[in-house]
Length: 401
Image (tube, rainbow, N blue to C red; front, side):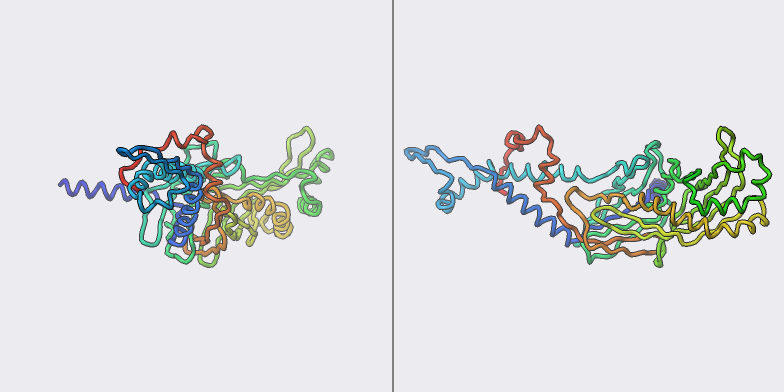
């Protein structure tokens, strides 16, 4: 009975385990690069160590050995040098490797703001898994509205998989990663646009007035020449679909056309629904994942009747042109800013390649140290620890490094 209970608990925990929206694989090629950079940093640290002169007495023998003759006498004072390593160098290396390098890890973004509306959570879901050739990490990879810091979207997407090893680093993103971003912006009220008066393209303004001429002429003369208003409002969070052939985003929005007379209630001329499909191309530059959107499919239909939907056919082309010219550039300005991938400061991606799969995409890249470890550590080291390394080093080891 106890065994059945334990098995039930295991299955229950497994059923509720959170799926990652983002995975990162660090291959042996990247680890070798980090190792080389770390050795370079340690070499720089050793250059800053000043070994004091050795003075002392053994029986009737007095000695005074300066730093310059250590190398010459090394074969005779092996035991003394081992003691020196324990007392002087090992603590410094420990301090450099364990304490200062923590400041490098502190520069990895875990949970922070993307812009004034939305943040992203890169919390680790479980301990990293190390193999002979890779280090794999699973992250929540979820966006959230900053106004709702505790809000989270359930992840029901396909779990991303990582199998490649040719590049130094691979990052995988599931559809959930992008869906949580679009839902967060939707909840933050960002997916709406209102164009009034001069903001409506002139050609579109004339076409809309001609299309609704029959309704406009029935209005009072004070309203007929009022500014035109075109309002787009996304009705539900857009959804991302990733296939080997490409990535698409489906959007459904309401389109309202109205006249806005000064100091009077607006007069609605029409309300319709717009279905659009956008293609999305992902790119990784520096350490930012960027998205370029393109309007591929577009159709409008009336919420009132099929007859009115037929009357809207002449608006199909100009509205699509308006979206391509007036709306898409604004969307791309926001999406091209990108979102940061969780990498330490001073490390960027180069030689990127994007591959689409069923339900997720992967980005492979090599690493480049834009800054040395010393520069990053010195920049992020707390002010009260600068120049105080000697007093904060741990007790010396009993065995030489």
